[in-house]
Image 1 (cartoon, helix red, strand yellow):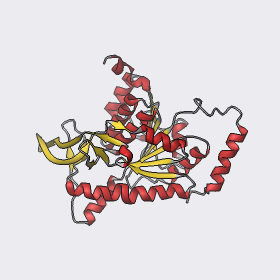
Image 2 (cartoon, one colour; image 1 turned 180 degrees about the horizontal axis):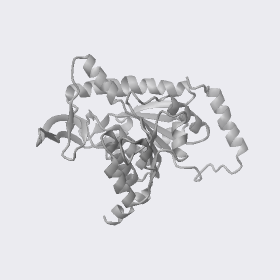
Image 3 (spheres, rainbow, N blue to C red; image 1 turned 60 degrees about the vertical axis):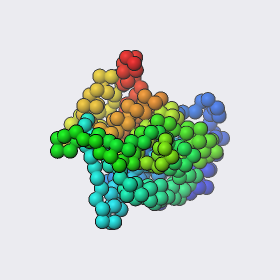
Image 4 (tube, rainbow, N blue to C red; image 1 turned 90 degrees about the vertical axis):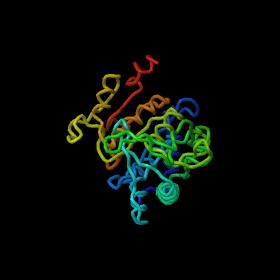
Length: 309
């Protein structure tokens, strides 16, 4: 599908090692790259698959984290059930995951979607290995059995939620896989502290992984990045390197982009080297992002916030 074979990728990697006298095997590598692939219909993963194949062949450690909320909603509807979304007091809209939704979520995300995406990467010659946040205790944290929501203008407590907050990443598991030449393909659910698999936001899962690995995080979506005017792509915000610039970025983010900016902050707080929000539907989406495309957020954007703690 991507035009790469395993033999071609291995040959390319061998040629890189043979021809680069300055390659340092230990301590001189670039940070890993964590790629978040969205689950919306408008996001085509094929370009990302080819780019990951290219990066891995050239010696870059890559971890892929993927979403899939659209597929979950479609499956619920096929089963005659309606997805439930709620608004938080801060104005962010998110999924409410009841017990039945959690069952469907577990079937679709680590089942069909993760398997299909892992197969795509393996077809491209990447030694991909699919994981959910439950496997090896990869993504863990406290469960949120109740959430605060706003309904008809009133704040309420809605119980029965099966979601959680990722507070720990088994980075040693990912590092072991990367050292063994594997490319982890990660998805939620996470494992809650009561031992139950629960839902978690995929952008924030990618942020947690990037922070734990000290990685560059590339968040691929269906727009070029964060726009100062959400309706005008010519107003792309290219960089946020200072607290003032980050404040402007947060103020500009609307809708689904709000969570991506929130994830950027969490990633940098956790130790990520950089966060890039960029267009998934380019020919070379990840390479383009790493070379300056999209919206780049650097640790300097949070310096004052960190110093004030």
